[in-house]
Image (cartoon, rainbow, N blue to C red; front, side):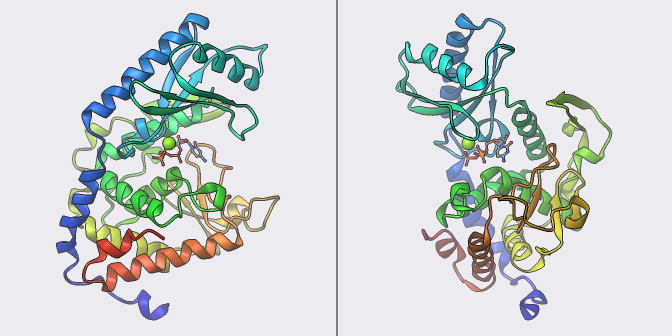
Length: 335
Ligand code: CTP
Ligand code: MG
């Protein structure tokens, strides 16, 4: 490992940006798909407001944070104040309301960790998950979207990393690997760390946006259009950053002691968070602090077996980026 750690990036790396950008472009959802998503949201809003005029629907997740690839499902949050109704009752009633219209496969999943209604719209062909009052997710969606507007390389990198993670089977939280949300935070952290930095730390700047959700104060600088071209002093190409991302997670990150923290724009120590030992099912083998729910480690799903799988995948990818004359083929090879 120490041998590899000293190695420099290959000389021809920048030439590889062409195929990587082609992959990125091919994953961008076409405008008509975005329109269909809006259409479905409008239909859902109409149905929900008939029953609950005060309720609101918000898009969150990849369809709203700008990290969604083509043909993704959409994530919707129903914001509702029904003091005398618990979440599973609301879910059941919501499923009832939606069932009666032309939507297909409406299912109420009341026992899931996050209870949801799942459905498919036959007109647009879009599938959708609706959760209740998960407003922190709506706020973190805005944070991610604001970061994406600062430098185009974030969206490019995140698309490529998500595509890699799906191809390699390491984007499955129920198998102990990481969520798409975690991968995007890893990309943001990585670009905050570059020298010179490609992204700033929005939560460390003057507050221009603030809300309190579930007793969590969420505050950050959101006037990103005023940042000019923040990352302009860093000229690293997308291929260089893909290589650097894998190299960082394969050989540079200190898994034993460090927590990555987009909130602080840096790493913090596991000891400071008391994430040094296993508590219940949380093993903290790779630590990714949620930017707002700071007691949440997004790596908590990772176990003894899957940490090995993950790290081997990072090393495999770093080595392909280092040595393979044609890295795109092998990098995204189905596992
Ligand atoms: N989320 C969260 N905390 C988590 C996981 C997810 O708050 N531990 C929220 C985030 O707002 C995230 C959204 O749920 O954007 C959806 O999560 P996920 O499915 O991981 O990401 P998507 O961006 O929707 O990715 P995909 O394209 O794979 O659906
Ligand atoms: Mg999603």
